[in-house]
Amino acid sequence: MDTAIEVPTGGDSFAEFPTYEDFLNSQITSMDLYYLEDEELARQLVELGYRGSGEVLKREEFEARKQLAEASRLSKRSQKKTLASAGKSLEGYPFLEALAQREEANKTGKMTSIIFIRDKNAKGQEISGYIDFAHRLKTEDFEPYFNGKKRLLPKLSDLSFYNWETQKSTSNATPNYQVIADNASGLLFKNKRDRKIVNVDPKAARPGDNSSRVPIDSQGQYVQVVIYDHITRRKT
Image (tube, rainbow, N blue to C red; front, side, top):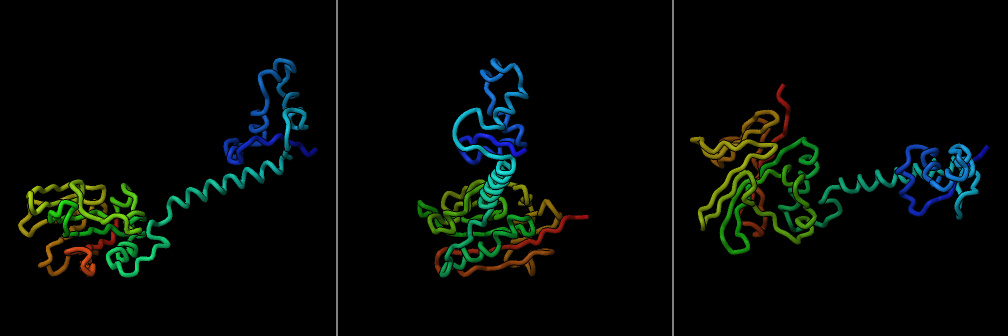
């Protein structure tokens, strides 16, 4: 026999119940059990639509709405994973275009890019530093950057930071890189996944295995920008 059930307010509530029976039980009140003294009988009355008021659902209709609610939940989750650069007009902003080209690869772990930026902060002080792009993507919302509302600049918490006026400097390991500062050839970054070294010395012939150095012409938007792309390959 086709059974029916009263529909509660709020369509998303269907996803809260694993089965139709669980949903059915949620409609039984303590007063129902007090008078009927039989949980199965109380459930049958709900199935027949005698409890509550408003629209009632057959089992098949409940399942259909539950699937719709689950699909909606997955869609919302998927939207949260959408690339921050998706749908943005970045023409005329070569640096942002370069970041957009690398966003997905850095989010999925196929690449871990190190961004060198030299520019001035809000106080007009010249600063420079190296940014672990993949790490920043996980810890910061990049929508304001791709919307042009914020400028990407190195922070004290990044891989490396230096204020040329105050001479304050910091270096920090990230989930992707270890900083090697005490090296004769300058600053080095060791990838924690494949143990490969990324040499950011501009005089070096090459930055290292599976790595490339890409200077970015920011068209005056920054003093200097260089991106070091490292294709991550787990060490076997």
